[in-house]
View 1 (cartoon, one colour):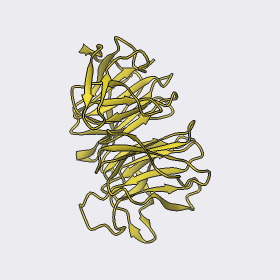
View 2: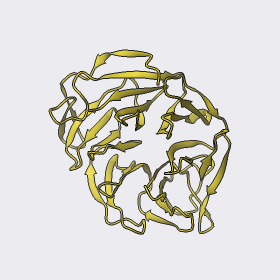
View 3: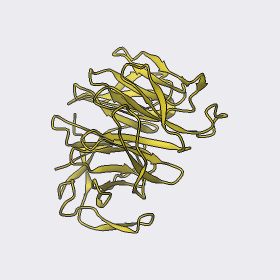
Length: 293
Protein backbone atom coordinates (compact mmCIF):
# COMPACT_ATOMS: atom_id res chain seq x y z
CA UNK A 1 0.00 0.00 0.00
CA UNK A 2 1.14 3.53 -0.64
CA UNK A 3 3.29 5.08 2.09
CA UNK A 4 2.21 8.71 2.15
CA UNK A 5 4.42 10.16 4.86
CA UNK A 6 6.12 9.35 8.15
CA UNK A 7 4.95 10.94 11.34
CA UNK A 8 7.62 12.93 13.07
CA UNK A 9 7.40 10.93 16.30
CA UNK A 10 9.13 7.56 16.54
CA UNK A 11 8.39 4.93 19.15
CA UNK A 12 11.29 5.95 21.34
CA UNK A 13 12.09 4.13 24.56
CA UNK A 14 10.06 5.47 27.47
CA UNK A 15 7.34 4.25 29.81
CA UNK A 16 3.76 4.98 30.70
CA UNK A 17 1.64 3.76 33.61
CA UNK A 18 -1.67 2.03 32.99
CA UNK A 19 -3.73 2.66 36.09
CA UNK A 20 -6.07 -0.30 35.68
CA UNK A 21 -3.20 -2.78 35.77
CA UNK A 22 -0.59 -1.06 37.91
CA UNK A 23 2.03 -2.04 35.33
CA UNK A 24 4.45 0.27 33.59
CA UNK A 25 4.59 -0.10 29.82
CA UNK A 26 7.85 0.32 27.95
CA UNK A 27 7.12 1.65 24.50
CA UNK A 28 10.13 -0.30 23.31
CA UNK A 29 11.45 -3.06 25.53
CA UNK A 30 13.91 -5.83 24.77
CA UNK A 31 11.17 -8.35 24.04
CA UNK A 32 8.71 -5.93 22.42
CA UNK A 33 7.35 -7.04 19.04
CA UNK A 34 7.75 -3.45 17.80
CA UNK A 35 11.20 -2.84 16.36
CA UNK A 36 13.19 -0.02 17.93
CA UNK A 37 13.01 3.07 15.75
CA UNK A 38 9.82 1.90 14.03
CA UNK A 39 7.70 4.73 12.65
CA UNK A 40 3.94 5.07 12.79
CA UNK A 41 2.79 6.02 9.32
CA UNK A 42 -0.51 7.55 8.20
CA UNK A 43 -1.70 5.63 5.10
CA UNK A 44 -5.20 7.07 4.66
CA UNK A 45 -7.31 9.87 6.13
CA UNK A 46 -10.49 11.89 5.60
CA UNK A 47 -12.97 9.53 7.28
CA UNK A 48 -15.49 10.50 9.95
CA UNK A 49 -14.74 7.48 12.18
CA UNK A 50 -12.54 4.67 10.88
CA UNK A 51 -13.13 1.19 12.26
CA UNK A 52 -12.99 -2.56 11.66
CA UNK A 53 -9.84 -3.13 9.54
CA UNK A 54 -9.40 -6.47 7.79
CA UNK A 55 -6.86 -7.75 5.27
CA UNK A 56 -8.24 -9.48 2.18
CA UNK A 57 -6.47 -12.43 0.50
CA UNK A 58 -5.12 -10.06 -2.20
CA UNK A 59 -3.55 -7.81 0.44
CA UNK A 60 -6.17 -5.05 0.26
CA UNK A 61 -7.20 -3.41 3.53
CA UNK A 62 -10.91 -2.91 4.14
CA UNK A 63 -12.09 -0.39 6.73
CA UNK A 64 -15.46 1.07 7.62
CA UNK A 65 -16.39 4.70 8.04
CA UNK A 66 -18.94 3.87 10.67
CA UNK A 67 -20.75 7.17 11.11
CA UNK A 68 -21.76 7.33 7.45
CA UNK A 69 -22.17 3.56 6.97
CA UNK A 70 -19.52 3.19 4.26
CA UNK A 71 -16.74 0.70 3.53
CA UNK A 72 -13.47 1.80 1.93
CA UNK A 73 -10.66 -0.30 0.51
CA UNK A 74 -6.92 0.45 0.34
CA UNK A 75 -5.37 -1.79 -2.34
CA UNK A 76 -1.67 -2.70 -2.15
CA UNK A 77 0.29 0.25 -3.51
CA UNK A 78 -2.85 2.31 -4.09
CA UNK A 79 -5.06 5.02 -2.64
CA UNK A 80 -8.17 4.38 -0.57
CA UNK A 81 -11.44 4.28 -2.48
CA UNK A 82 -15.11 3.78 -1.68
CA UNK A 83 -16.19 0.13 -1.79
CA UNK A 84 -19.78 0.22 -0.51
CA UNK A 85 -22.46 2.54 0.84
CA UNK A 86 -25.50 1.76 3.01
CA UNK A 87 -23.63 -1.07 4.67
CA UNK A 88 -26.04 -1.75 7.52
CA UNK A 89 -23.59 -0.18 9.93
CA UNK A 90 -20.85 -2.70 9.23
CA UNK A 91 -18.30 -2.17 12.00
CA UNK A 92 -16.04 -5.21 11.88
CA UNK A 93 -14.87 -7.49 9.06
CA UNK A 94 -13.12 -10.79 8.58
CA UNK A 95 -12.46 -13.04 5.62
CA UNK A 96 -13.39 -16.72 5.50
CA UNK A 97 -10.74 -19.32 4.59
CA UNK A 98 -12.11 -19.28 1.02
CA UNK A 99 -11.99 -15.48 0.75
CA UNK A 100 -15.56 -14.36 1.45
CA UNK A 101 -16.00 -11.09 3.33
CA UNK A 102 -18.16 -11.29 6.47
CA UNK A 103 -19.18 -8.26 8.52
CA UNK A 104 -20.90 -7.44 11.79
CA UNK A 105 -23.78 -5.13 10.88
CA UNK A 106 -24.49 -2.99 13.92
CA UNK A 107 -27.36 -0.99 12.43
CA UNK A 108 -28.75 -3.93 10.45
CA UNK A 109 -28.59 -5.99 13.67
CA UNK A 110 -27.24 -8.86 11.61
CA UNK A 111 -24.25 -10.82 10.44
CA UNK A 112 -23.68 -9.86 6.78
CA UNK A 113 -21.81 -11.16 3.74
CA UNK A 114 -20.37 -8.64 1.26
CA UNK A 115 -19.72 -9.34 -2.41
CA UNK A 116 -17.10 -7.94 -4.83
CA UNK A 117 -19.57 -5.41 -6.25
CA UNK A 118 -20.20 -3.93 -2.78
CA UNK A 119 -23.64 -5.46 -2.32
CA UNK A 120 -24.44 -7.57 0.70
CA UNK A 121 -26.88 -10.12 2.06
CA UNK A 122 -27.95 -11.18 5.54
CA UNK A 123 -26.52 -14.40 6.96
CA UNK A 124 -28.45 -14.35 10.22
CA UNK A 125 -30.23 -11.65 12.24
CA UNK A 126 -31.75 -13.51 15.17
CA UNK A 127 -31.30 -16.24 17.74
CA UNK A 128 -34.38 -18.34 18.42
CA UNK A 129 -36.56 -15.71 16.74
CA UNK A 130 -35.18 -12.88 18.87
CA UNK A 131 -33.33 -10.12 17.02
CA UNK A 132 -29.69 -9.45 17.74
CA UNK A 133 -28.81 -6.25 19.58
CA UNK A 134 -26.06 -4.69 17.45
CA UNK A 135 -23.34 -7.10 16.19
CA UNK A 136 -20.03 -5.29 16.57
CA UNK A 137 -16.99 -7.44 15.80
CA UNK A 138 -16.13 -10.95 14.65
CA UNK A 139 -13.39 -13.50 14.21
CA UNK A 140 -13.48 -16.49 11.85
CA UNK A 141 -11.72 -19.68 12.93
CA UNK A 142 -9.61 -21.69 10.43
CA UNK A 143 -12.50 -24.16 10.01
CA UNK A 144 -14.87 -21.33 9.02
CA UNK A 145 -16.79 -21.06 12.29
CA UNK A 146 -17.68 -17.47 13.22
CA UNK A 147 -17.50 -15.88 16.66
CA UNK A 148 -19.18 -12.46 16.92
CA UNK A 149 -19.96 -9.99 19.67
CA UNK A 150 -23.48 -8.63 20.10
CA UNK A 151 -23.37 -5.84 22.72
CA UNK A 152 -26.46 -4.30 24.22
CA UNK A 153 -25.79 -0.57 23.79
CA UNK A 154 -29.31 0.38 24.90
CA UNK A 155 -30.33 1.80 21.51
CA UNK A 156 -33.50 -0.30 21.71
CA UNK A 157 -34.96 -2.82 24.09
CA UNK A 158 -32.93 -6.01 23.97
CA UNK A 159 -34.96 -8.99 22.83
CA UNK A 160 -32.16 -11.22 24.06
CA UNK A 161 -32.10 -9.81 27.58
CA UNK A 162 -28.63 -8.32 27.22
CA UNK A 163 -25.39 -8.59 25.27
CA UNK A 164 -23.71 -11.87 24.30
CA UNK A 165 -21.00 -13.46 22.20
CA UNK A 166 -22.30 -15.97 19.63
CA UNK A 167 -20.81 -18.82 17.63
CA UNK A 168 -22.06 -19.76 14.14
CA UNK A 169 -20.74 -23.02 12.73
CA UNK A 170 -19.07 -23.10 9.32
CA UNK A 171 -22.06 -24.90 7.77
CA UNK A 172 -24.30 -22.20 9.34
CA UNK A 173 -26.50 -24.84 10.95
CA UNK A 174 -25.53 -24.26 14.58
CA UNK A 175 -25.85 -20.88 16.30
CA UNK A 176 -25.54 -20.52 20.05
CA UNK A 177 -24.25 -18.08 22.69
CA UNK A 178 -20.77 -18.87 23.98
CA UNK A 179 -20.47 -15.89 26.35
CA UNK A 180 -23.95 -15.18 27.71
CA UNK A 181 -23.10 -12.74 30.50
CA UNK A 182 -21.08 -9.87 28.95
CA UNK A 183 -23.55 -7.04 28.43
CA UNK A 184 -21.11 -4.97 26.35
CA UNK A 185 -18.76 -7.42 24.63
CA UNK A 186 -16.82 -5.42 22.07
CA UNK A 187 -13.65 -6.54 20.28
CA UNK A 188 -13.05 -10.24 19.66
CA UNK A 189 -10.16 -12.17 18.13
CA UNK A 190 -8.95 -15.74 18.23
CA UNK A 191 -5.52 -17.28 18.58
CA UNK A 192 -5.80 -20.54 16.59
CA UNK A 193 -2.34 -21.71 17.64
CA UNK A 194 -3.09 -21.54 21.37
CA UNK A 195 -6.83 -22.16 20.88
CA UNK A 196 -7.92 -19.03 22.71
CA UNK A 197 -10.70 -16.55 22.07
CA UNK A 198 -10.04 -13.03 23.42
CA UNK A 199 -13.01 -10.78 24.20
CA UNK A 200 -13.02 -7.19 25.44
CA UNK A 201 -15.62 -6.59 28.15
CA UNK A 202 -16.34 -2.95 27.54
CA UNK A 203 -18.32 -2.35 30.72
CA UNK A 204 -15.18 -3.22 32.72
CA UNK A 205 -12.59 -1.97 30.19
CA UNK A 206 -10.89 -5.36 30.59
CA UNK A 207 -9.92 -8.25 28.34
CA UNK A 208 -10.55 -11.95 28.98
CA UNK A 209 -9.69 -15.12 27.11
CA UNK A 210 -11.59 -18.39 26.80
CA UNK A 211 -10.34 -21.85 25.74
CA UNK A 212 -11.81 -22.80 22.34
CA UNK A 213 -13.34 -26.28 22.47
CA UNK A 214 -13.61 -28.67 19.49
CA UNK A 215 -17.34 -28.08 18.95
CA UNK A 216 -16.97 -24.28 18.91
CA UNK A 217 -18.07 -23.82 22.51
CA UNK A 218 -15.80 -22.08 25.01
CA UNK A 219 -14.34 -23.06 28.34
CA UNK A 220 -14.28 -20.89 31.45
CA UNK A 221 -13.11 -17.29 31.12
CA UNK A 222 -9.61 -16.27 32.23
CA UNK A 223 -8.68 -12.68 33.08
CA UNK A 224 -6.03 -11.45 30.65
CA UNK A 225 -5.47 -7.68 30.95
CA UNK A 226 -6.88 -4.63 32.70
CA UNK A 227 -7.19 -2.79 29.42
CA UNK A 228 -9.67 -2.83 26.57
CA UNK A 229 -12.00 -0.34 24.96
CA UNK A 230 -12.71 -1.37 21.39
CA UNK A 231 -10.89 -3.83 19.10
CA UNK A 232 -7.83 -6.06 19.30
CA UNK A 233 -5.67 -8.47 17.33
CA UNK A 234 -3.04 -11.15 17.97
CA UNK A 235 0.21 -12.10 16.23
CA UNK A 236 1.69 -15.56 15.62
CA UNK A 237 3.83 -15.31 18.77
CA UNK A 238 0.73 -14.83 20.90
CA UNK A 239 1.20 -11.11 21.56
CA UNK A 240 -2.13 -9.33 21.88
CA UNK A 241 -2.62 -5.75 20.66
CA UNK A 242 -5.47 -4.00 22.49
CA UNK A 243 -6.90 -0.60 21.53
CA UNK A 244 -7.65 1.85 24.34
CA UNK A 245 -6.13 5.33 24.67
CA UNK A 246 -3.25 3.89 22.63
CA UNK A 247 -2.49 0.39 21.37
CA UNK A 248 -1.27 -1.62 24.34
CA UNK A 249 0.69 -4.80 23.66
CA UNK A 250 0.66 -7.78 26.00
CA UNK A 251 2.53 -11.05 25.63
CA UNK A 252 0.67 -14.35 25.72
CA UNK A 253 0.92 -14.45 29.52
CA UNK A 254 -0.71 -11.05 29.85
CA UNK A 255 2.49 -9.17 30.67
CA UNK A 256 2.96 -5.67 29.18
CA UNK A 257 5.24 -5.83 26.14
CA UNK A 258 5.01 -2.38 24.59
CA UNK A 259 2.81 0.46 23.45
CA UNK A 260 2.06 2.09 20.10
CA UNK A 261 0.96 5.71 20.23
CA UNK A 262 -0.99 7.24 17.36
CA UNK A 263 -2.14 10.86 17.01
CA UNK A 264 -5.82 9.88 17.20
CA UNK A 265 -7.61 7.47 19.53
CA UNK A 266 -7.41 3.95 18.06
CA UNK A 267 -10.54 1.89 17.48
CA UNK A 268 -9.25 -1.41 16.10
CA UNK A 269 -6.29 -3.10 14.45
CA UNK A 270 -5.25 -6.02 12.28
CA UNK A 271 -2.19 -7.38 10.47
CA UNK A 272 -1.45 -6.98 6.77
CA UNK A 273 1.42 -7.03 4.26
CA UNK A 274 3.06 -9.87 2.38
CA UNK A 275 4.64 -11.14 5.60
CA UNK A 276 1.65 -10.11 7.78
CA UNK A 277 4.04 -8.03 9.89
CA UNK A 278 2.44 -4.63 9.35
CA UNK A 279 0.07 -3.58 12.11
CA UNK A 280 -2.85 -1.59 10.67
CA UNK A 281 -4.58 0.73 13.14
CA UNK A 282 -7.87 2.55 12.54
CA UNK A 283 -8.03 5.74 14.61
CA UNK A 284 -10.36 8.70 14.37
CA UNK A 285 -10.35 10.11 10.86
CA UNK A 286 -7.34 8.09 9.70
CA UNK A 287 -5.63 4.73 9.22
CA UNK A 288 -2.07 4.13 10.43
CA UNK A 289 0.56 1.42 9.94
CA UNK A 290 3.66 0.30 11.83
CA UNK A 291 6.01 -2.64 11.26
CA UNK A 292 6.61 -5.34 13.85
CA UNK A 293 9.63 -7.63 14.11
